[in-house]
Image (cartoon, rainbow, N blue to C red):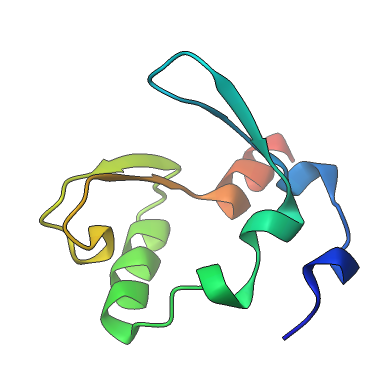
Length: 86
């Protein structure tokens, strides 16, 4: 597994989240692009791939969707967002 400090800090991959408390949070590449955060479950990856193929950029996933693990979550397709800028 690569050391997160060795991952290039590409400004295009920094995520800025505005939470429901109104505060903004910056999450750098080395904090989210890690082996520990990678989704490895094949069923979940299949659902995500299907959403990406449909062109989903941002989605609010309910807690009954396999990827949410019983919690509501947000999906942000960073790759698709980059393509929108091209």
